[in-house]
Image (cartoon, rainbow, N blue to C red):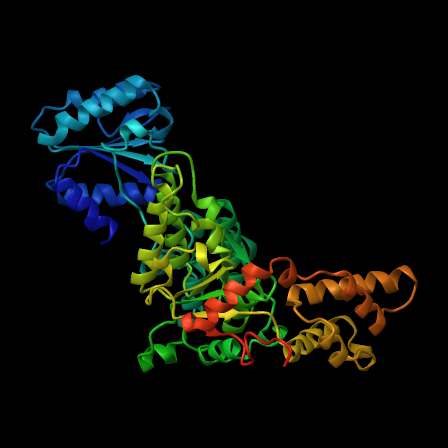
Amino acid sequence: MTFREEFKLLLRACYPLMYIPTYEEERVEAEIREEASNQGNRPVYTWDFVDGYQGSLNDEGFGKRNPLQALEFVEKISPAGPAVLILRDYHHFLEDVAISRKLRNLARSLKSQPKNIVLLSPRVAIPADLAEVLTVVEFPLPTEEDIKAGIELLLMTYGNELCTNSLDDLVRSCQGLSMARIHRVLARAIAAHGELQPEDVDLILEEKRETIRQTQILDFYPAKEQISDIGGLDNLKDWLLRRGASFSVHAKRYGLPHPRGLLLVGIQGTGKSLTAKAIAHHWHLPLLRLDVGRLFAGLIGESESRTRQMIQMAEALSPCILWIDEIDKAFSGLGSRGDAGTTSRVFGTFITWMAEKTSPVFVVATANDIQSLPSEILRKGRFDEIFFVGLPTQEERKAIFNVHLSRLRPHNLIGYDMDRLAYETLDFSGAEIEQTLVEAMHIGFSQNRDFTNDDVLEAASQIIPLARTAKEQIQQLQEWAASGRARLASKHSLLNPRD
């Protein structure tokens, strides 16, 4: 259901109090006015703290610097008279006892009147005592059609033209930005060289990164890692390579559905996060990293609103990769937390979206402790596949050493005995192998020489791998994977790493 459809329904159902979290005041007010006009030409009055009411010649400035009087304005309109009152930035006053009481009184008295009060705010900030009377209505970011119409209008204003392909690229790059930001960044581009150019896509992408950073929910992550940087994990890499073109126009014409996502379960340091970055690079898609902890906030409804905002942002930027690192830590112990069910509601919103989403957002979630994950997330339909990423076998350790040494010492690769190094690092994860090489470099550097094979072996002898310190936990994880509940990321044996 679109915003217009939902708002129309709420008007007709006489919902007295609505709360719309958005930064796009101008656009949402235009939508409200248009729909109010369609509903029998309902008058629309707007109020803000500085200027009071606008829209009524007789009461211009009424309620100026008086938020309680702003609510009393509704009583100046006859009970049978229709009206929509828009109150800007009203979240600042909701904690006031008089405001709270007045809103609850209005929630009862306006049920039988054709009047609606709409609170506009850049964020959800609803006190607990108003949670039942305020209906939160989401206002989405502009669609592809909205953006295209806005850019075409701007081009017409400046007498500028773009070919169809350049215009489509510009529209696609603007997805995920508010209309105000789009106008601002395009005006900047025009001011820089007098017209819009295809190269302005880079300017828009930088604005998009800044927007995502400001949400403080998602991070726009630069993905430079390649599939070839992953040592081993051949089954997983084959699976990814087969789906490399699944988001293309050709795949859509073929009738191929978008891949939904991937859950990577396994031991710490085995390359799960590296895989998420490599997918984005190989598929040429933006990588958004979600810190689930940022979704949770103290005020009633704000956590759920942040979750919807995250989903809205990801869908607006699609096709993209949504990377959720260590999802097990975010949702472990679900139902036993003393947070009035907030975690359960956030989790419910998230997994429902995963099951029902039609947008090309590929979710890559990583987990170290599968036992702590709710069973609902493992159900078919959430992810295309669940892969177990275990400890590397001897062949894979050799490949990992080769990847790192090819980067660190490409001129002296022949000087390292990969077979010996792989043999002597039994139970080492990929991260521990990397740390071994860093330690070997410290040894060589401290003696003013290049590090050698023996330095690597000495460094390895000083590192106790996680597979030995958390032996029982890792054994349980391996047995879970061996029971057939997940595909193996490696073609080699899971339980016998020395082959």
